[in-house]
Image: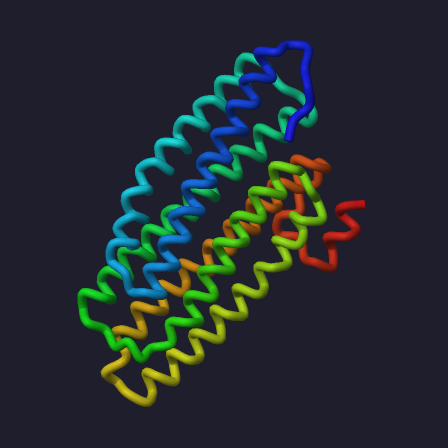
Length: 233
């Protein structure tokens, strides 16, 4: 993720930031795994574990942001170092928001279970979407650490798969609600839950875009797949 500098202390500072980002990513990944299990098993203890990790994610974001600000003010980085710190800043924002979405999923699943919602609703699609979203976060972080542009672009393209699952799931819920009005309330809960999963996929995409920026200095946010190739040339 970084190059060697004449100052070993500078290297240590950048290494510490990089290590903290990976630690934060690991905590968020744990949140997402437990959130997925909470959906699959309707497990309240798994949902509670997600919520317990939320404070740690928030604390790591604040600590990393402080370290980035300190390095930028003291070292006045340029070129790739500057891009790295800007990219890391974007990554931690998206990791924290992914953690927020995982916590939102946990709270909604807790309410869903406590309200005795029907177990006949199509939760498998949600589990599949949550698993893909968690995998996208993990892959994006791994590719960011290696500054692997090809892998980062694959994460960006994979976001479409999560969107397709989300849209298909909404169509199923509409069918359930039309067939039985008693399903409207639980289906609405699941709609919000599905949206949280879809947003996690968006955050993985944002992390991947930050990685591309660090690696090649090109900002591909809000760029269509058709335009991306010319931008990266």
